[in-house]
Image (cartoon, rainbow, N blue to C red; front, side):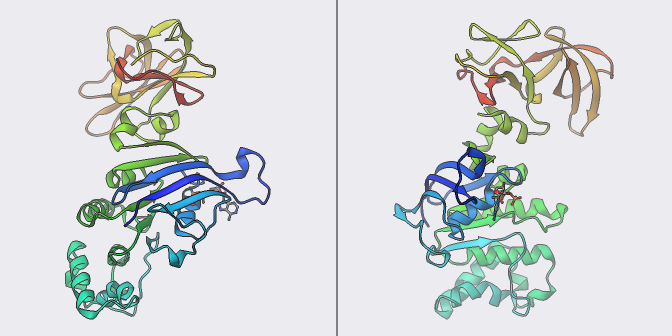
Length: 357
Ligand SMILES: Nc1ncnc2c1ncn2[C@@H]1O[C@H](COP(=O)(O)OP(=O)(O)OP(=O)(O)O)[C@@H](O)[C@H]1O
């Protein structure tokens, strides 16, 4: 296992890139600790595969370096990097038994039979596939095939990193949660450096201790699931993580405070001086309906099971509130109050309030 460092990494698919838009990866500086569980989360086209291919060695970056435990591997081909990869679609040999599939990566490296047997049985037990060891892989369901693929990725104990690239794509929705929690458990048991690439926030937040959120070739925030939820550094993170995402209201900034439609809105801390379009950001979980606050009219109410989402319009802006218990009717006049310590200002997308007092 290894610590992975990405230093001043930039990549363009064009021969002579000149402007920021020419870069699929704009500037990446990251350090991934040995044994950590990381997710790379972002929408389609944000640069996840480009970054993954640079780490695995399929792509040489236009600029910057990749280090495994301080050793520069930027120019090393994939087979010299000692990485295990699990892809979207299962990569297994249909004609072989489950046992032989799991044993393959070890036998391929000349590991002795006793060690192969011990390791295959250990991994099979972790994945709950011991009863299938003698079954031909061809007969397995798609989720079991993907489990075996994961097992093949985990069976070697000498790899620098195990990378999962959208591994649950082919899994039925009702089985996804099982494999999601299985992967988390596997990480806790084997403690390898793992990188999980996905556009799905639930998968990223379930698996990772640290989530790297990407947008347009840039890392916008690295944090624990709680940090991403509680203090998004960028409106993109506020919107992309959470359901529904963070509310955004255009505002005016004066003397370190924020004003919406002329009313002062209490914030977690003072707004830092600066230029740019300002917005108040507050998650629906921290909006309440009461007797005081911004006057609003309820446009929609959605009952989503454990709670309701009330969509109210104030000053022409739609604001969502997560409400437990009784809810107002559509068309009702309400007042919206924001929990001050969870209300902040963003300038041109980036967090601009001082941390809570
Ligand atoms: N071979 C290529 N040639 C030119 N441009 C490319 C190439 N591969 C990717 N790109 C561009 O680089 C940017 C990042 O793409 P990338 O595939 O890394 O994103 P992604 O987040 O993995 O998206 P997806 O989940 O859809 O694969 C996109 O704008 C994409 O169009």
